[in-house]
Image (cartoon, rainbow, N blue to C red; front, side, top):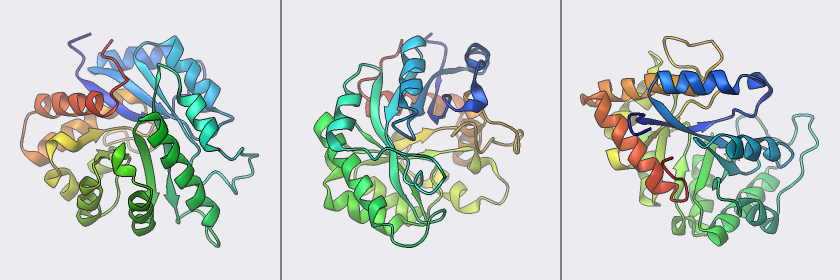
Length: 265
């Protein structure tokens, strides 16, 4: 599979949107030069399906975590402990801890439980030596503060689906983290994200779909899929005035360097 250049560094193929579509999705990936994808966990209850997909398909990898905004959605969500996350991460196809972080957009009020959940994930990542997948929305200051307080630079990771300012990106980079751009970078009015896409070092850049969400132009408004990460990479190449192949090779090399337990099968 050396001819397949791209990695979708963040998707949710375990979601009900994709039931029964796995083979077709992988066919579309191959047709669009996408060789691998990482499925991020959102609850402990759903994690077995994430792991099963990674076990069944050599080109899929998994991350274990509990999304910061799962409380309050009407689900019964089991709160993660450090030992639980460490145990679930002890698997050859589980290459990261997350997604985790802070979300002050969807939930309001006393969110100390969210900050504590975030700290639990960071501690688990440090024990496993596996990088973090960070979700942050309207919470950049607290996200960066907690990463510093918990010594997260020991393991690093990625700020996925980045929607913050260039200043926040630079602070994340200073902590040893990568920046991942989603289909948002293809949106006409996403000027702040386009600026980030131009300016961050190429050796700290990843691309993703966040499927089934945030389909890039020209599929905006439709159900997203990993194959369409190619459009994200093409837009980043256009913004940086380099070739698509340059972005594809760099982001793939970055992925396998960051998620060191993933193999280029």
